Structures are given as C-alpha cells and as structure tokens.
Image 1 (cartoon, rainbow, N blue to C red):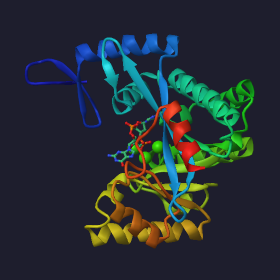
Image 2: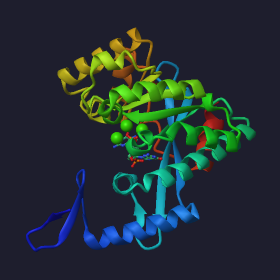
Image 3: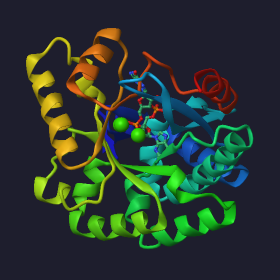
Image 4: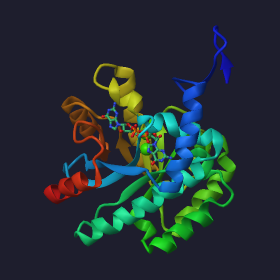
Length: 277
Ligand code: C2E
Ligand code: CA
Ligand code: CA
Ligand code: CA
C-alpha cells in the first residue's frame, strides 16, 4: 500500500489502483464467494490456424458479485495472489472446469481439450501437484485432456524448481503451456529444459504485428524456435483478419482472440463446438 497525496491508502496491482474501501469489500466478498463457489468459468475457443477448426478452449474465470458488480480477473486474481486466497479460488475453478469437461463429453464433445490458467502462487505451492492429482481423482477426469497455462514470469521466477514441477505434471498426464510469452525474460537454457508442449505469444506482440516489422520479426523467430523445440505456438489476442492471415503465413499453429470468438458461457461454448465439429 502506498499513500496518496490526500493521505488515503491505495494499493497498486499492475495498472489498477484500488482504494482501501474497495479492497476491504473485495476481500470480504471474495471469501464469501469461495464458500459459495460463486465463480463461473467461460471458455474461449482456440482455432487451428491452417484448417480454421476448433481445437480447444481456454477456461477463464468470471465473477459477478452483488456488491461489486462484475469484477475482472485482472483485478481480483492479483489481489487473491497477494493474500493467498488464490489457492482455494483456483481449486473451485479447476473443479468447475473438470465438471464442465465431463458435461462437454456427455454431449459428444470429448475431443476438445481445455486449457486452465495456473497462477504463480498456486504453481509454487509445495502441495500443488498433489492437490491437482486429488482433484483429478475426485472428478475422475483424464488429465491428458487438460493443458496448464503458466506465465513466463512464473516459470522464470524459480526456474530450477519449475523443471521438477513440470516433470511431475507431465507424469500426471497434463500438457504444459507457457502463457504471455515475450513479456518476461526467458533464459533459453531453461526453456529447452522445460518439458513444454505449447508456447503462447503475448497479445502485445500480436497487436502490432501488421504495423511493425520488428514485432513481425520477433513472432517469426518465436515460431521457428518453438517448432525446432517441438512446441506448438498459439497467438493470443488476435482481432483482425490481417493478423490471422499473417500468422498463418508465418506458420503459427493456433489462434485465439476476438476475431474468432470472445470467451463464451458454457452453453454458448457447447453451441460453438457443435457448429464447428
Ligand atoms: P490471460 O491468461 O492472458 O488471458 C487472456 C485474456 O485476454 C482474457 O482476459 C481474455 O478474455 C482476453 N482476450 C482474449 N482474446 C482477446 C482479444 O482478441 N483482444 C483482447 N483485447 N483481449 C482478449 P480475462 O478473461 O479478463 O483474464 C485476464 C487475466 O486474468 C488472464 O490473462 C489470466 O492471467 C487471469 N485469469 C483469468 N482467468 C483465470 C483463471 O481461471 N485462473 C487464473 N489463475 N487466472 C485467470
Ligand atoms: Ca492464459
Ligand atoms: Ca496470456
Ligand atoms: Ca496475461
């Protein structure tokens, strides 16, 4: 917390400024929401760049609260990380995703893998792999159906331990993805040691890919490097046809973004999948 000129305490989470009163309310309401399992999960389609077919979904948490309205995950996830509330919140989210995956399957949509975002604090929790295994057992789902997205910052923060955690997660059957690639500082020597399946290029590179030669050169290099390392590449935040066409030319594997679809409610995602398959 920092002091503003007028002496009100304010907290800074990334670019968001939240005043003290709102933080207290957020804290109380988050705790209630955990108890009531009041989070919803939406699903954003991932599209095969070459065939334009649906090849997966990314699960994104949504939280609508009576007192606070719709609270963006960009606001409450960082707060939950700071307070440790992220661990029980993540567990609720993962349980819901597993349940939804079973509902997808029962509708004949079993072939659509789902990516789950794992926050930094949760990933670094000593019992992370164990608790994940327990959730898999409880829900009786197949771990190979799920991809775990961990940000570049998280994995590089503690790269030596990340290697071990990643190997354990692969043993459990999960596939692994680096999120927001290009925003942190990857050490290439670690990147080759991580047993990764996928690399997601951050939206900040995609946004200006058609306007800036340099961005295009970086994306081109990331795609080539990933393929040499046997990883698939996802471009996120793709909003325009020009971007789709350029990414396809560069050999990008998967495309995610508003151009194809915003994140959808479970029911909307079912309709999307039924129309696409
Ligand atoms: P992220 O994992 O990088 O997710 C991508 C974000 O970009 C999502 O925002 C998504 O709605 C948005 N997005 C997708 N396509 C486009 C596009 O074409 N243009 C633009 N401008 N935005 C696009 P969202 O859902 O608000 O999530 C924000 C962040 O909050 C996520 O970034 C992730 O870090 C975190 N988050 C969201 N859901 C979860 C969750 O279930 N668990 C955890 N641990 N973190 C989550
Ligand atoms: Ca993500
Ligand atoms: Ca991302
Ligand atoms: Ca992000």
